[in-house]
Length: 216
Ligand code: ADP
Ligand code: NI
Image 1 (tube, rainbow, N blue to C red):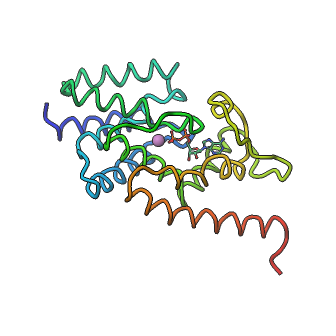
Image 2: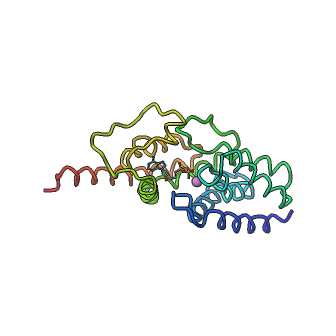
Image 3: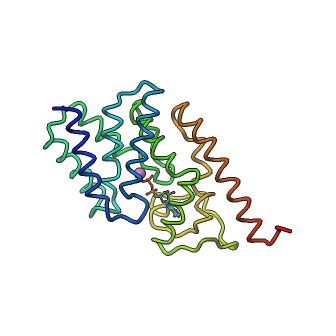
């Protein structure tokens, strides 16, 4: 297995699989997550090959893009087998992909340093200016309102409610985005999350000022 070759082919595969997505999992999301994962891996001395490969493939198995999560996972496993990725690396990447997703915060904490790195990189892409943009893109895709002052955040979300329930774009900040900075695994991830959190808080403050006509 030539690691550089596997990475190049994984990038090609992810790009081809996610090119058409408009739900927030497009190729450029994967590209950003991969670059952030490599940056965090360097600071946290995690294995860069595992982090890069898992980041590139992390959304290929998503249930939004496959008949089911299981079918998606099997597809990625077949891809790794066909590309002769060593069994230990393959198991590690598969574990990362199947455990990092948010699912309403119900998943147990991830186990390895590399999983922590990729999970932080994926979560960081939901924060800050990009996180705000993705939230509104996803909301439009799902047919949600921008904001509904009568909507109350669902605090105790089940996995089902999280995946299927409608909220609002602004509601999603309380539901998930403002919680993420306290769920970061690595020191580097935490540092970047703090900064992106402030960007979201400033945005929300201004949003509500405009909504309530308080700009005099
Ligand atoms: P990922 O798998 O990349 O962690 P998700 O599938 O949970 O992300 O969501 C993709 C993007 O859409 C993220 O930026 C997320 O914050 C946003 N998003 C997810 N659910 C909602 C929702 N109910 N309302 C608005 N935005 C959402
Ligand atoms: Ni993702």
